[in-house]
Length: 143
Image (cartoon, rainbow, N blue to C red; front, side, top):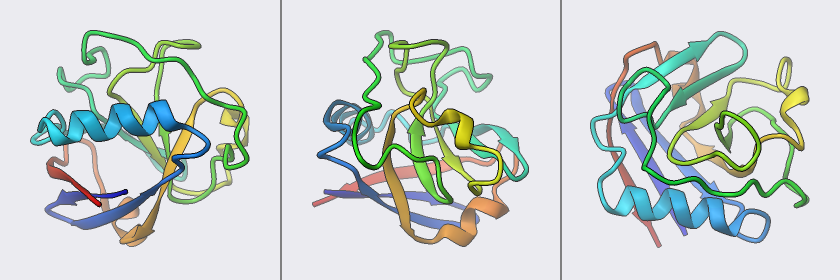
């Protein structure tokens, strides 16, 4: 299973770490299939760190109304360039918010803390073009 995040800056194609983080992958794809992410913004963009989105309030304080557990024991749990990871406010508090890493330069401290559940396999150049407030026009799950 794969997905695409469509923005005005381009499309980021995702591949998932289904073996390492099956619950995070299912959560993200279920929300995407329901249209949850469509029209939401990247509310947090920090150069050479991450772009973050998935907050229905647009300010980093919202979620889907439930939490999922962290999955940090798999082999792909390294926050490298283009990695998709669950944002949270503390262990086992993830929901709909996620981030994508700009690079490995400033993200090693996130390993083992946040669940890596996929990566950008095409369109990685879009990550560096995203600015605060840019919209996810739609997130499409492909099989």
